[in-house]
Length: 85
Image (cartoon, rainbow, N blue to C red; front, side, top):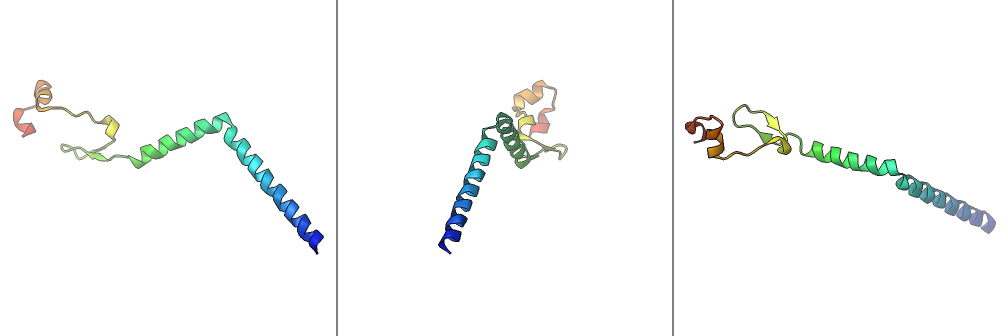
């Protein structure tokens, strides 16, 4: 009976070692690092999707697409002074 248990324990250790070796090999592949970086960037983009609402048209926009303007800048671009108030 103990031989069977010992054989089982050895087989389990080998299986665990093989899993660890495969996992280490997968993590060391250079394309996988790029893939992880792109996936993280994609998830961040999805998480921050369309979180700014335009006061004029009601459109939804990403933070990186928004340019904040002062009253003076709006007037310089031709906006009516009353629009900003």
